[in-house]
Image 1: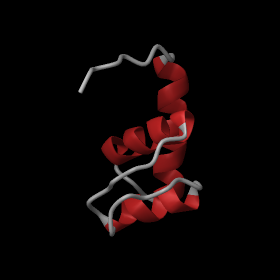
Image 2: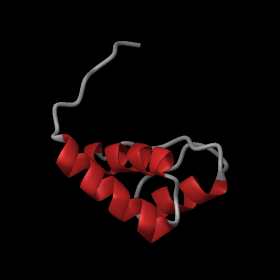
Image 3: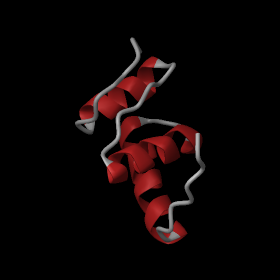
Image 4: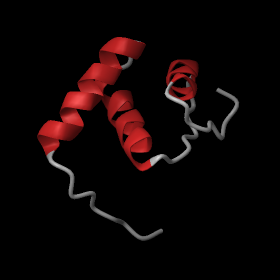
Length: 66
């Protein structure tokens, strides 16, 4: 798979990621994946229930059974 670097500012991305982490009680690590998926309107394939629930709450498609 090709690697693509997202040019969004770290301040913008981290601001929303921290907000999502607090709102959904996620780790910063999981919240950064959620933030990117929300911003790009992409589905997630999480392996844990908390991230899957957060993705669904944010209106994303979830590709795994989490």
